[in-house]
Image (cartoon, rainbow, N blue to C red; front, side, top):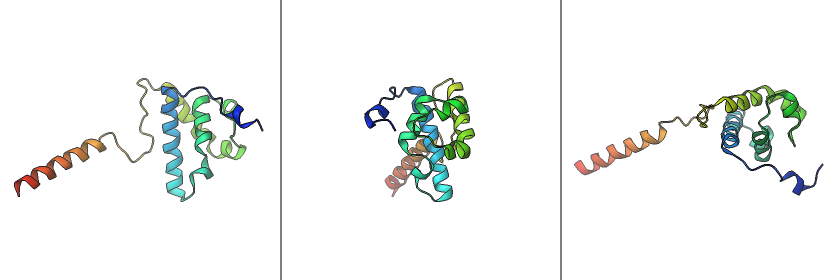
Length: 124
């Protein structure tokens, strides 16, 4: 196993890396919620960052990611590669709907509800 300082020498996270990292975390968290397990059981944040940085497009590239285990590749490899390909093909740099329960309008709905509550409070 390489020394700790060697493992920290990943390239800086860029916009596309951020996008893939967001997708990976949302995917991992959906598994955690569904199966009631700890996030590190699926993949820790350091591994997700390494995957996002590598943006693997095939199994060989995924196998080369520092810290990934064979069982993780066997269990989750196809989905990880799918998310990496989706991120690579994204034109606008924003994540697509990744299974997260936060829709694009969630903040707007909250503001509207707050505005209507304020109007109701003023009418009393």
